[in-house]
Length: 328
Image (tube, rainbow, N blue to C red):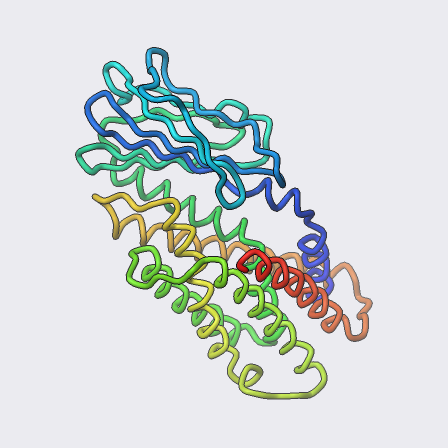
């Protein structure tokens, strides 16, 4: 099992900063102001100081009411448009030009004057969507479930923490209790942050999340050196405490995407279910790869668990420094 985990850590550790920035999704918000008038806000990711070549393509006939303007934002640029589209946008296609040549996604949130909201995820393979007149609850549930799965599987820091927990725990029953505690905890703060019941600055939260990974990795090393404390004897307590922290990270992402006013409980529930499904997929994949590797390789390498823990801690320490610098 340890050998398979080492392969995964090596992959995570060698992600370049450019790749990490490229994976940040864009965010397109369409807000209907009247039957034919819309405010458009498009956050475009950037690679360093260079903006990605992404542009909103509205249906033919839409005209600008004001000159377009752009402003810098954290990790990208925000384009602002005020447009008039004769006949409105219902049933018409909206696309992101240039998306097909990137490795990023664009999250779309279209809100109508009657309070209904349609959400979509555009990808390089599917860079356009059609605005429907009345989005169904099933479409909303599907969109937010997939957003939750994508967020956790793209959240390298959250997966690194789960990986450290798997290194810390030997038996499956304790692992199940620990993952459950982590799930319950981050579900609480995810809802609180997404619904604005609690407001925590996102930059410091991300820095402390990275610090929590360092702590979990250090506990693995302490355990291998015969040092036992509460985190070793009752890892679900540590998982619950840090899960509250990680939930603010999930909630911040969901808050940026936005919740449909008419289906807030449904969107919140399905996003959370998507996060859990993605987390279980990751745990299952690690266990499956570990089982295969253990069958193929009978050689056991000494202190390999320490090597993996040091790798996780080292990567997380770099993230701590980067995120603290960003937060200052």
